[in-house]
Image 1: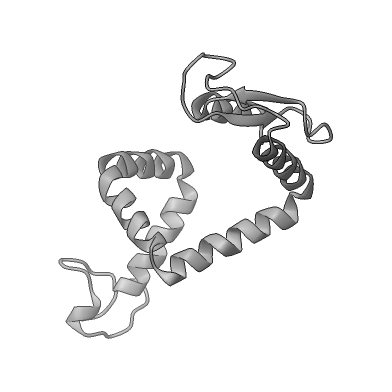
Image 2 (image 1 turned 180 degrees about the vertical axis):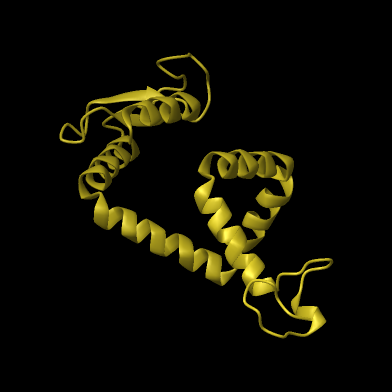
Length: 148
């Protein structure tokens, strides 16, 4: 068969089923189409993620249990620590203060009152002991709103 895009003669298994364009040309076409239509691409990806949420979560969980997955996490953590020394320092100081009993971690969120695992939110990392104690949901909402 001959590809109508690149004009090369190729075997039938190098073409998608019922197509006149070879797999390589089809791949390039799709790559360019997604680049040219970012809104539709985002909508499609969001819909696909929602549809396959459980399968994606299972695949990620399985990957994270492998040595390669663990190494990937370690590398990402080290990169984050290198790029965010003030955040790392503030988090470590709060962790150590709670561990030695100098600061008590409350059992309820200071914003919504939910009782769960409470996290320390730093408004200013230069003041490491000035924190707001929040549940994960409130902490994520505030950090997202702050652009962190």
